[in-house]
Image (tube, rainbow, N blue to C red; front, side, top):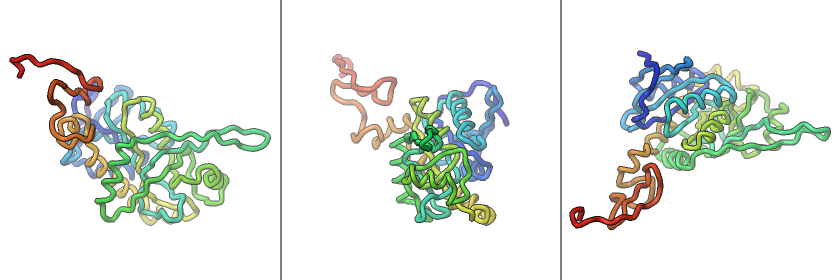
Length: 291
């Protein structure tokens, strides 16, 4: 059933974005019951509860490219007001020790096309978009408990190019200017830029490796590497969400991520409103009746 018009924002929501149908199907398999939501402009997403968590997961298949990702991420975030945003999908490996089926969790994402063309050549103007430390930390914790998944925490390169030639100008550009990047994909910069401009979102990019960004890409894809890589990335993303609690759940928990203290977030003559509309303690005085 499709729901149109205004959407309730009372439940903690995470938006999980994908570019391709194979990526969408891999994440969708973890959300057994879903409803379709339709934005007034026609964008369609599915929403369902992630089992054994407080999260309502909104799934969206955006299509390829950073421009599309930036535009539709902005629209979806403004519409559904999520607490967190993940871009989950496949990528090509840029490192010999990161193989097909491994997962790269982006510690930052580079936009690889920025620069200036001069008579002396192309001068790179690097741009890197940050990810959420809380989500990276949750991913590191989750990865330690996962069997059958090799996770790497490295920068990711993002540009509107499919790289299938390790000797190409693009490959040389990456090795020369972004040599710490472990994987290359096409949407992470757009999604993170939209999340960054929102200013209130935890955001992360999780990519399963489906090829080595070389001429063997076609053979790897034909052998089912995309399905395998997408499934691995989806499993890591779900494990992250099982670790990272919604704000409302965290503030009510004895082992809240909001601080190292345990027990209730109040005591003495101080009431702690962290997790509310503003931050910091509010000092007041209790009457004899309240005592």
